[in-house]
Length: 72
View 1: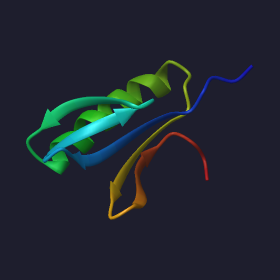
View 2: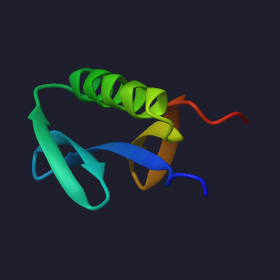
View 3: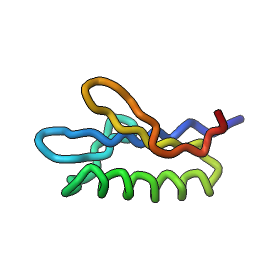
């Protein structure tokens, strides 16, 4: 049985940068870069624990992958 894919989504929410994971928000972060760095560190830890993990940003309704442990 494979573990679920952990998707850390960085987005501007309620005027601040946050990370969304499984419909829960974490933050706020002072900048987009700070949120991406935090999400990436957490995703790497999840990946080391066996979870497929990705960090995405969402701007204007579009997703961009910033980091992933999942092979293309």
